Each structure stands twice: as structure tokens, then as C-alpha cells.
View 1 (cartoon, rainbow, N blue to C red):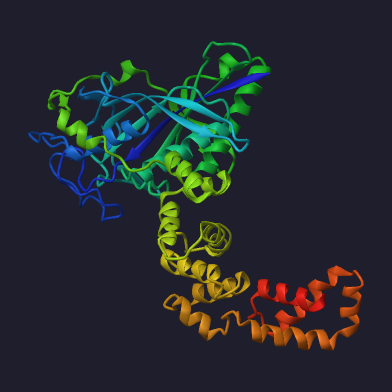
View 2 (tube, one colour):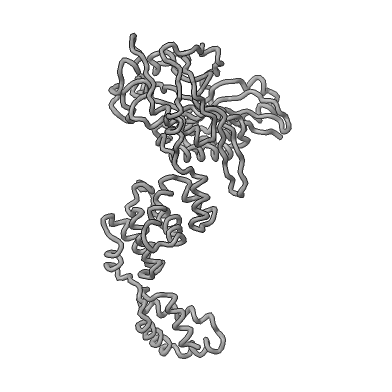
Length: 476
């Protein structure tokens, strides 16, 4: 039996307006090589100047993961020769990063949890982007110099499941404190996975293989599973030392295999030395006081929702899994007369089931104010829960419609007038005297038949609770 050992390196693009060491914009998807200047092109004589907001956002992350924040940190030069790196080196933080010794807790479905150690989070400049067009390769340097945080875990994960839970939790925290859009498709949240195996009970760390730049949680899980299977097979075949070498591999999603990309460099290959063009980075007490203020984190919000709204742990986990969803729910609760139970059901069961294709929680045709109003109309018994679904369906197709106007238009307003309901109940009972006698003789399940007939007669507009009460009285 083998134990899997996984460590993760996550590169997060910070959502600053300008680059790490110059005033060029960081906007995504602009025309190639337009967001550049002598500094990010590393032209002779151009000098870097640290973006203060990068420091701010780095310290916010350090606060969120309960890490040590170094009030003095340094920048180092890391040499490598890639076509998308105009300087032939990267400015990073090797020896004294801004953030060290953090932690992050993941939660499993069975209610248990595990705390993962985070070794460090250091600031560095991103490279550009290679664009492969047939037989020609092009270089776009718009991204060169974009500020990154590289967040490096300890090798504490023991399965692909744990790795994905860690990444999802980290992704959620980044979005909650709003230091990155963490868009995996656009490359602002990229993950390198370090995988090794060892016999169970063995404490030794064996040869690790790095799988580079995977951009979805699904593919990260699959890449780990495939690589673990490759390493176990090599061990069992007696060729582990020959086939499992320290290298960088790519995950082929189509063939479902990892493939060798290049040998993994050691620190000596990068020829690190202190960056001569930058002073040490000093964080003052005033900056610490300002930069350590962060919004409510997902775990704290989840606990508050459980206590304040009396919701289940599962529902609280679903609603707080994304900051946009949590904000949507709280906006619903700001509507007068809304109960948490109704709001939770409408959001997690009804709305989420209808958000498909181009729609998500941020661009839903039915916004939080409208969904909250629908919930309020259920709670004040203006409409039934069934009618609310019809209102929601209509409004999903008619974005400009208003809740109360839709209720009137569809004729879904609930009849609560007891006199009108009594008249309908009398009519149904008189038309079904035989079943009324059976009910009185002890066949109580026939109550459902009478309720159904009254609801049908009212075209669903009668208040079901009132119908139940009045029928029981009249059939007694």
C-alpha cells in the first residue's frame, strides 16, 4: 500500500490596476504588446518601482491565512531564458518573502476537517505569453510584469480530493478578500502540483514530479490520479528509480496522461541573487494597521449564517462557498418580511437550478432584490410556493418584469378570504357526498382528495393551509 504526498504552488494574479513595477495597465485581452513600457520590457536604463497596492493585497492574504507577515522583506533575481521573459530573469522573493507560515483548514463531507500548512506567499513578476499559431510562435508581453503572489503549501495533502478542497478553499478566500478575480480560464489562478508516493508508514520524501499550469479543479484532480497511478505502476514493476525522475510534466487532457516537458531545475540553476535595482521592502506600523483589515472570511460567514439564520451547516456551506452567492443571500434578507428558510430554499433549490448556460449568480435575470420580494410574497401568503415557481419562471424569461406585476398578470394571487374558501369547500363536499361519508367513517386519507379538488377549483389560488383547516372543520 502506498501513501500519496502532494504539495501545491498556486500563482495568483493580483487585481491591481497597474503592474508590479511600472504604471502599465494589467487589463486582460487587450491588443498584443500594447500594455508595455521600457520597465516591463526590461530596456536598458529602466528601473522598477514597487507597486504599494501589491504590498497591501499580499498582507491581506497573510492576515486571512493567519500567517507571519515579515515587516522587512527582500526581492531577488531569478535567471531563466524563456522567449516570453524579455529580461531573461524574474524578480521574485526567495530568501525573505512577505508572508510565511500560514494555514488553511479544509472541510470534508462527513463533517471532519484538516488543517494544511502554507510555507509562504511571495511576490513576483509574471512573464508574458507565447502564442502558437501553426508553425509560427508569437510573443505577447502585455502580461509581462503583472503582479503575482505565489502561494506554496507544505506537502500535507494525501489525496487528489484533499488537493482540490484546499484549492477551492484558497480560491474562495481570494475572492472574499477581493485581491484577485482568480479566473482560472484567464490564467489569474494557476496551479503547479508536486506529486510523489511512498510506502505507507514510511516518512521519507521520495522523488517528486511537478505537473505544470493546470487550469481547472476537474483536471487537477484527474492529473493527480493519473500521475499517482503512473508512479505506483513504476514502483510495482521495479523501475521506479529509472522512470520517476525529478521533472516537470504536462497533463494531456485528451489522452488522460502526464507527459515529460523538461527536467526540473534546482535553485542553483536559477542563479538567484539579491535584486540590485530594488531597496528592501519595509512595512510600517501604519501600513500594517491599514493593510491587515480584511472582510469577513468564508468560515466566519458560514458560522454566522448558521447562528443568525438558523440554517443547516450544509445550506450555510453552499451559500458561503462563493462570495457572490453569500452577498446575494444577504441582499435577499434585506427585503422586509423575508424568512431565512424561504430565502434559502428559493436561492439554493429554485434559482440555482435555473442558472444554466450563459447565466450565473452575478448576471441572473432575477436579481437578489426580486428573488427576495418573491420570498416575501410567499411568507406573507400573497402567493403559494408553487405559484412562486411560476413567477420565477416568467421572470427568468422576462428580465424587466416586476414581482407584484407578474403575480397580477399571471393571476396567481392567493385567495385568503375565508368566506370565499368556505364556499368552494361546501361546493366540493356537496358534489362528493359519498367520499365525505367515507372520510367521516375513518378514511382520513381522503382529505388529500378534497384539498386537491378545492385547489383545482380555485386554479391554485386558494391558501392551502386555510383550505386544510376549513375542510377538516366541515368534514367533522
